[in-house]
Length: 159
Ligand SMILES: [Zn+2]
Image (cartoon, rainbow, N blue to C red; front, side):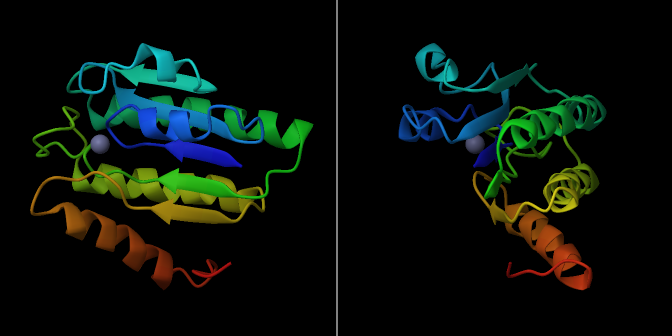
């Protein structure tokens, strides 16, 4: 399983949950200047990409697009990946009071469709998990991604 964690917070709970599971590979992009400051669980991350405080969308998307394809290719070369998880935290949104990052709504949509597309192009079924998001707009960010996925007739919402 490939677990792509794009919530603004470092994925300490995910790391703890899969601490000894060698079949789960974790890719994490997070704001390293906010909670949880958990260096111990961070060691579990296979591709660890800490971001600076108030990282803007251009830099965020550049980091994602230069790192995710190689990560997935390295996994699929050595074994078959049965499932992808896209942890689609919307607390990366610029107005979010907790995430400390600076993506626009359009950049969050671009992120989500890019990640889903990377899995789909490799034939890997993917589950999107809506996670952190602490503004009155957070539901709308998730709904926008889901609406785009449902409108795309080349994508089956149920694998
Ligand atoms: Zn979060």
